View 1 (cartoon, one colour):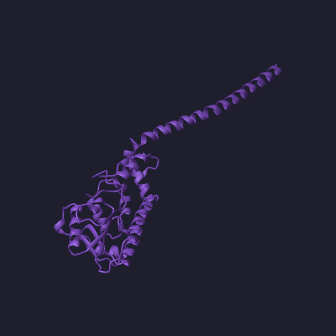
View 2: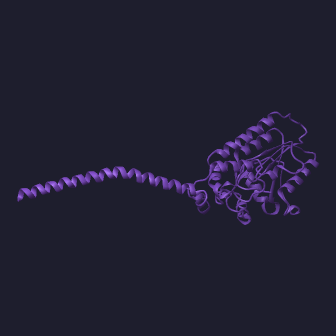
View 3: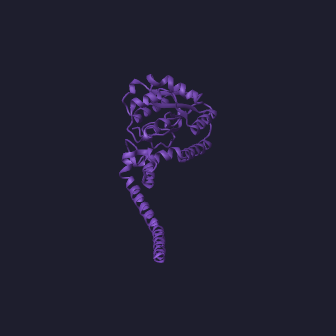
Amino acid sequence: MHAMLHFSSLGDSKIDTSKSHLIKALSFTVSPILAMWKFFLLLLTNLFAKTTLAYKTGPFFPNTLFDSSYCLSWRVAVETNNAGPWGTVPMECVLYVGRYMLGGQYNRDLETVMEMIGAYLDGMEASDDGMNAWVLDVDDTCLSNLLYYQGKQFGGMPFDPAAFKSWAGKGMCSAILPVLDLFNKLIDRGYKVFLLTGRDDLTFRDITTANLHNQGYLGYERLIMRTADYKGKGAKFFKSAMRKQLMDEGYRLRGNAGDQWSDLQGDYLADRNFKIPNPMYYVP
């Protein structure tokens, strides 16, 4: 009787051991399959992110995918002015634009523009009459508003005039260093440099002047700002009129640099115009 019980217990033990081995074997087989399914489901979720989650979560969720090929094409269309008037950065490209601005490519593109301007300058003959001039835009050409636009989803949110007015009134814009280097090079070579901005003269002259000086922009000929006569006028119209005034004064506009096409187009153009990259907003 005891022997039979002992035999039975041994049999049960063997069965339990077999079950344990079977469970382990199944786990080794099933676990990879479950992991693959989990990966597959995660992949499907991410593939749908650019058409659903991207619109709901915005740039603050790093797991949201964006179509980098589309966003690159969109940015090229912006920089070549093929996009025409546009209001905000497409939501599926907000994360892409943020990485472009902060990840090094913006700086490299900007340096390339500066290299091209340098080559242009090196091929020009100097003039001793003091009438060779350059025009430089201010916002996001001489001074950076990147810190402000980081809080606006890098242009993914509609422009807020009151919020930008508050930001500009703080005088906290930092110099865009490659442009500051260009500015100093122009001064050293005897060019008259005119800083031309659409900022309101009455509201922003003092704070903009202080901001420019604090960031190293010293020795320019004139800071030209929007007066009441041009309130409500487009940037292209306003800046064309200001360039006409400079030409009427006898200045030869050898070059013009700005981050908006409205800085560079219109009438009374400079001999050469250079576009500073900016995919965050459009000014008509």
